[in-house]
Image 1 (cartoon, helix red, strand yellow):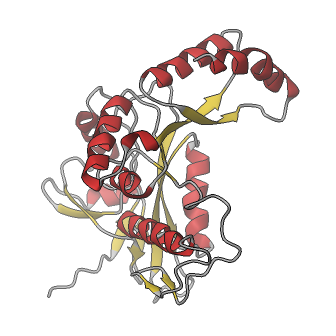
Image 2: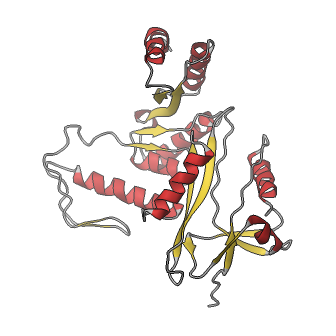
Image 3: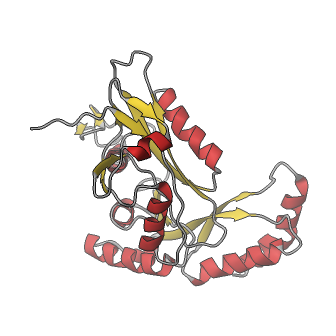
Length: 295
């Protein structure tokens, strides 16, 4: 086997806007200056003695059609005015003969600076932030382990051995009051990994607000049929920001709640903008909650 160990790397970024997701991604690659390369995604190890180049230096190393290895973070949305961010952080050890880490982070509602700090701090503090595939494996094994602990009066005490989670004795004493177990909510709109996990294990989903919700819920219905579960037992939820700072804020907020309800969302889990001030809470209590109760 031929080993490829990168000797140089650089950071770049790009933004693309288009009504078609694939086209917007292509425009983002052009903005980042790497659209002419054959990109190969790799996991997140910063090689020993690897040089960190500036963007301009790195661009000079690239040729059209070149096979280029990347650690890429991306975020996309079709929702107007939605704040999204994607970032990659790097942790470089003092001893450059040792390897470091690169971590991807993508988010909604975070500024560029906040998202960048998240990825940098995760690496710098040594927090585990494995590749996406491993995080999904860890999520599923964690749910499986919890279900074993919630089984019966004391938990299923047989050993649980997953690739990432291991319990010698899944014991839960005192047992949970909610039976057969506390409600499980799995958040995310991913159609390849997240929604299949919702159909298999969850009592509630949490879908990103977008015009894609009806199609995603229809996919969830089909996945539930495949798993032999009742689609109607799954509560449909979405994240939501309660912002009433402007004179039109209440009307726009209620319109968005109606929009979500019309697509099948039953519950929103929200946060209040400027929650440290009393006025937004008074407006929400006086005008939003009574109107939302009638939706």
